[in-house]
Length: 303
Image: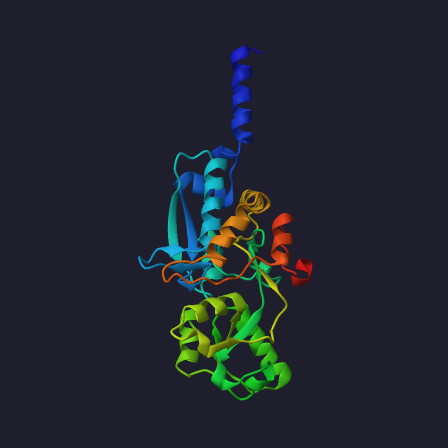
């Protein structure tokens, strides 16, 4: 066998095996390599995870993590540059837009649960939250049963509105459940007394209260509709190669200490555009998760 032919075979094998070789790529990685673009789905008002600043630019905790993932994908594919396209999503549209290929990563405040894993996949957990409600102190709504017969709002397409619906049926509360298009609209309904309470993830409620005209007027319930639940960056189902790269990127962020720094930036310091400080130190459970990253949808696995 001629030496030049053997070298040619070796080069062909290396190209096929290499992560950046177009021949060996499939799914999302192949599309990103061929187009030189990646599309991120972002939220408009999920403070501090993914929201718009004064210049209508998407920023936040989840956005920072996603940009680190983008850097890892760029390196993996050996791209000189990778264009990031930004696509707004809502609670109702995020899963369909992921499934139909419109977005490649969803960077927001999306709960990872077993039901959703039938449609989409998630990378390692970056936050843990529980489903509670916010109401005006003047309403004197002390527990979930006090919502009986009242109008309560939650955001369409969320696990929260499903939990509210289930509790309503199980407890026979006869609640008038109002679906809102986004979190901002839902909170406005409580502000303007069109609903007595808003059911949502507790950290999102905290951010909405902190940014309101009169934060002292509101109280977040101790009663919860759920156990602490994991948030994850969402990606397409059955794309094993892409998930492997994204999982490796997030695991490196969390175990290497960068995750804690990004967390502190958004939860313990003043954040734009209003200089809010959510004053929410990292929980013991999330610290444990960062030490041993997991994409489990089971709340009990984070105890």
